[in-house]
Structure formats: C-alpha cells, structure tokens
Image (cartoon, rainbow, N blue to C red; front, side, top):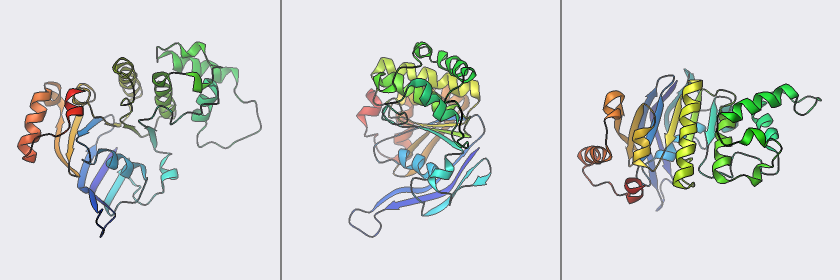
Length: 264
C-alpha cells in the first residue's frame, strides 16, 4: 500500500544551517499494516510523514501509494489518498461549527457542492452511529460547537473525520502528544479500533516507546534520517523498552538520547 524508495531530503543545502533530514529512507507497507515510528529528536520521523503527505518535494527517490507514483503530486491532490491527524487537537476541525457540521464536511470531501439541505436526517443518523464507537457521548451532542470540546474529544473526532472516507493511508503525527496520559490512552484505544474495523493502513509517529511497542504490527526506529530498526510479527509482540534500547545502541553505536521517549 505504501512504498518509500530511497527518499532523501536536505533542508537549507549549502548553508551553515544545512540539515540532512532523510538519507535514503526505504519502507514498504502491505495493506492493513499499522506501523509505528520511534526515534529521538531530529531522527526524521515527522519529516518522513511530511514527505508522504507532500508538504514539500523530496530531493531524490520515489513515493508510491497503492502502486501509484505520487512523488510529483502536489499536497492538495494527495489528500484524496490520505487521512491525517496532527499533534495539535485544534487542527483538523472547525471550532465554530457543530459536531454534525464537521462530520458532514469530512464525509463530503472531494464531492461537488450542490444546492440542497445541509445535513439530512439519514446523514445525522449515520454520524451518530460513527460517534458512538468513540465512547465519549458525542453522539448526544451533535449540535455542540466543536470549540467547546476538550482536547481529547476534539482529537478523537478529528481521527474519526480523517477516516470517514476510508483513506488508502492514515498518517498520525504524534496525535496524542498534547494530551494527558489518561486521555491519550483513550484516543489510542479509539485509534486501534478504527484502524482494525476499517482495515486501514497506517503510519503513527510517537515519542513514547511503550506506545510504539504496544500498538500496531510493525515498528521502525529512525536515527539521523535513516531507518535503523524494522521489527514486526512475534518479535514486536515480545519486545520490551529495554530490548529496544539495546538494539538501538547495537545498531547505531551510541546511546538513545531522548529521555522523553524512554520515560513517557
């Protein structure tokens, strides 16, 4: 479903601020893979997601989604293939609009606008059923302005909206980092449910090693713009944080420097 082939990206080339962000990244995801990405600051985690999303052009390499080469496709056109949830819960929803109105915007993404009733009764019923799976009681608050919701409620809603159109690939960029631990755990539970029930292919960047191990069927670790570990199957299920740190130090030749990732 996703192929990243020898992708390279350097920011500010030829200047004192030159940063080689991606140095020959290769990754293949099968349909239904849920892959977590872990690594220290500047490892290339979010840069990889931005490359897939088309936030900026890559210097070398190719990116394919479902066999289609999208390397030169602009960001707004890639939206037809992608769902994305960002770190900031305020991103991804319209605060001044009702929950039902936000759901309708997500459900009609890419469709032609016509002169008709805003939201039909049938659509409202469908949105209520979708909202029930969140377990947050939002199905009874359809007319509530999204700006009045908590950060966790907004992030769960954003996740639901991002997957309404069954994207070929779901990108999760540290989408629980701004939430308290209890709320983050709930949003991750919802994430697992939505990905599993819709058989989605997903890439999730996280700073939390425990979450990277506990969620998904694949785990990759990045360091200095490269993928240095790629763990899946039974090996991932049995993995511990201590073992992951040991493998990182063995492959990279240095200690893992992010206390935030270890202690989260």
